[in-house]
Image 1 (spheres, rainbow, N blue to C red):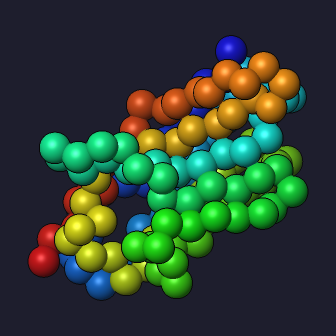
Image 2: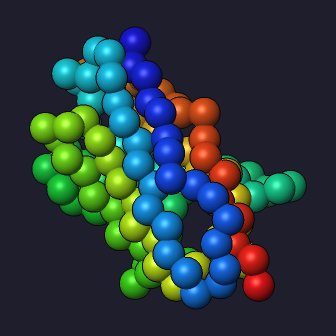
Length: 117
């Protein structure tokens, strides 16, 4: 089992910044890709950004040039630096990790980001 714990969410004004963290623990040897997803009220959960163990990244078009995903494999932690936040970025942000050997996906409990206009 893998446990994922997100932190860093909160209330921020439009144009502001937040940094989310996702700490992984447990059976993490097989973890390859990690990613951030978000779910706004009444909407489906969507990919924000993902990062492979080697560092390859993917971003949703809506966050390109504003958000930066990174990971510290030594600390088993992933980050999401969010700049120039907009009210439409308001959502619960979830951390996800995938085990490349078993195909199992793990999710954190989420952290709420609220951007006021």
